[in-house]
Length: 266
View 1 (cartoon, helix red, strand yellow):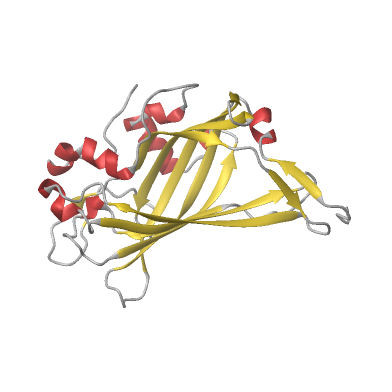
View 2 (tube, rainbow, N blue to C red):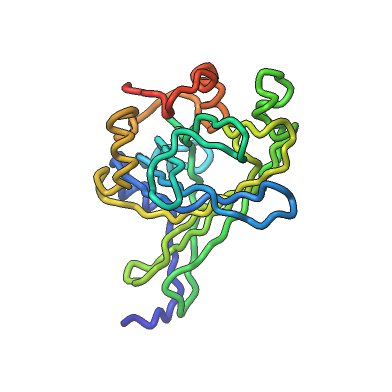
């Protein structure tokens, strides 16, 4: 076994060089908890089954000479905590109306990845990095009376958490990366303007070899309703999609009580 006597430097763009143009799949799963009132305990309310169909590229870059580029299709389904069944309706409180469950359905999320050197210290098989990204911006649904019951307030305030592990090639038993998010309740929950409920997402991420290695419930939904999520384009000029823009795009279907995700075949 190596004693890792020397520091080891990883070039983050090596991943993009190695996997340039390849179709990759990521499986992420975990729980969504909520605090319906500020002083209430955090309570799990959903399981979540997610995936990314990703293509990675190394491309010329004016600023850096070359940079990484990722194009993703991203789908996350809210599921029953006990059975794992995909939820299509949800009732927030006894006596409240049930509402359609709108999944994370981001048809395109893409962006540039800047070059970076990461040094793993001597004696260590890998380096753990925790990135916290504070989020604060005017809420996209604020100010429009159509969305008043779907807007938690004038400002969106939350935090994104990414934990990654940069490893030496021979390192074993490296923990999986994780993604977490603290945020207001989701617009499809329809809790009413300025309702104080908050959510916490906690997920573990795994890169898998094939589409068939994703969560079986997710595979079925993709094949039946959104087969475009099986593959990723090599390039696109479509704008990035978020959960909020997706709901706005399909708000009329939501109001009709449609089952989500809305079918997408091309």
